[in-house]
Amino acid sequence: MASAHRIDPGEFEVLSRQWHPVARCDAIDDGPVGVVMLGRPVVVFRSGGRACAASDRCPHRGSPLSMGSYDDDDCLVCPYHGLRYGADGRCVAFPSRPDARLPSRLSLETLHTRERHGLVWACAAEPTRDDPPDWGFYDRPDVQTFQIGPVHWDVSASRVAENFNDVAHFSTIHRVTFGPSDRPVGPQKVIATERGFTSNVAVYQQYRNTLDGSVEEIEADYRYDFTFPFSSMLTITYPDGEIECIQLTALPESATSSLVFQQSARTNLGGDPVEPWRDFQAAVNEEDRVICEALRPRQVSFRLDDTGEVALPTDAFSIAYRRLWKSLS
Ligand code: FES
Ligand SMILES: [Fe+2]
Image 1 (tube, rainbow, N blue to C red):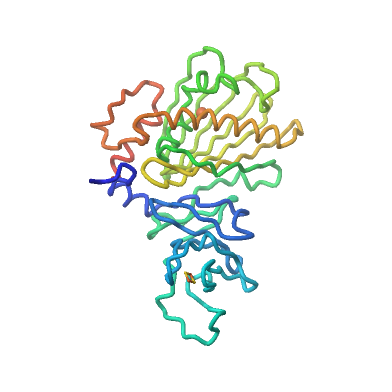
Image 2: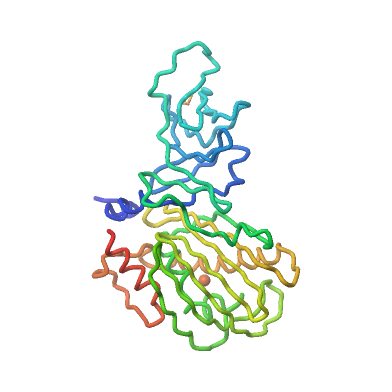
């Protein structure tokens, strides 16, 4: 019997050719990091200045390389018997027997990798596109930024993506942090783009980026740019002209669990410090995580005929998203 956590073969086929976030760039500077991508353990490491990703298993005796370290030559060191691996995954040295012939089978299965906008992205098979999502706002010289996570969510990456693009839960789930009182939600027209969807919606919300700020209610412009399969960028323009850009993406670990990466950039007209803003955003994400992990089932069915869910007029994004998935898988 198929495991409930195994990704549907059709979805796996689609996802194996997409870019997925695997680490923050700064997380692999001092040593490797282990993640699970599409059910498979992956080690993310830096060698020769490059971000690399490979199967997290030493071909000698199966040790997880994510428990290893870097040597002075910038190689990945297996924690068990010390085999050294380079950026291309080839074993280049065995210090315990420097003269030993190293079999060519001592090679790691490598993944395609890119570094972009503060994150390392990996793709298991031949990528359908050359580049991960375009989140250039994050790299602007005139913005403040922060990264939080990654945080493990016990729910599918598709549920994470749908939740981030859903504006109808603000007044309930985010009632405490920023949600408005009881105003109706404005219309959200979702338009297909080359890489996903875009939409604009006016949102009434409390104007505060800290947990102890004012609770004045304002109308903000929310622009969503979604890159298939799980990457969302929300650009919020406030009435005073301040622009805040929230970027959220998820690594699909299994059919029902994800590793969620979030980062933000803002123009910061008021000159406020980053920390309260970051803590506020982390609190908002926690509100989302708790409700998403409680959803049943913990994954979206893209077969559409057996979801057992009833769509509402405020579900414009998830309706378009599920249709797109159905056309692909
Ligand atoms: S298991 Fe990696 S060197 Fe032995
Ligand atoms: Fe939310």
